Amino acid sequence: MRGVISLIVCIVSLFALPAHARTVISVTIVEEWVDDAGGRFTAVDPAPIPQGIARFGPFRVIDPRRAALVDATDARTPRAFAAMIRAYPHITMLEMVECPGTDDDTANLMVGRMIRAAGLITHVPAHGSVRSGAVELFLAGKERWIDDGAEFAVHSWQDNYGREARDFAADSPVNRAYVDYYQSMGMSAPQARAFYDMTNSTPNADARWLTAQDMRGWIGQGSERQRAVRYADVTTQVTAPKIAYLDLGRSIP
Image 1 (cartoon, rainbow, N blue to C red):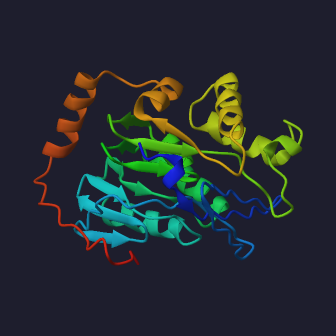
Image 2 (image 1 turned 180 degrees about the vertical axis):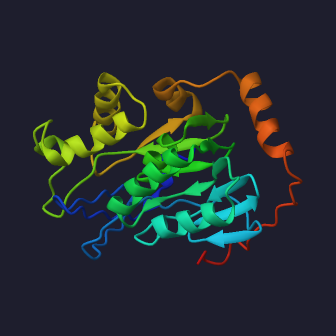
Image 3 (image 1 turned 120 degrees about the vertical axis):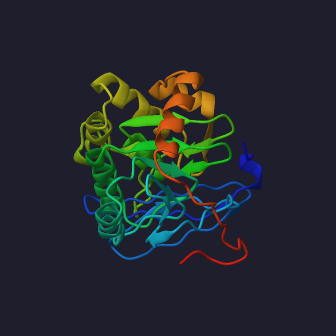
């Protein structure tokens, strides 16, 4: 897991009701406000990005059964996801490789609901990184798989007036939006509230890094052997091409 002390990040989030932003800091703070669509993301050194056989926004199709999320989501991502599923209707698994968050929270939660409706498994492989708004997408999986060595980052949001979750009543619309989403992703009401409270226990000016073991404690997960069998089922139903990798020195479009 990367230490917070080495983190230089920029996260922005503007919600429609009201606007939000999340910003994680350590030694250096980089903060930027964007248009009203808003977003939030955490930037760290990228993992190797699979180029795959097709691209749809932040998604890469690895083979007809698997896609990967390799970049931040934005307002265009729901359309990109829908196009990917139309073109590759047999996709079963979403590999979450390098997931810094989102530029548009409203669209991000829409994508989460689309992932759940499509019945996809979300899988964070070893060295996969799921941060900020991308955590909501991980939770959208019909099944959620986490390999040892995966990492997650959570923290409180902050709106454009400097207010954080704790500055609003627990049952305010802005807080209920998250809790309701977690419940729609299969958490009980107490679990959803506890998970949301955990993320907000770390202030906006910091980040709480979670290991694979930490996140498993929040969501539960089948045994390693059971997952290995299911993963083999997913990956051997089609002939999977070799995965090429992007030049990490170049930005991802």
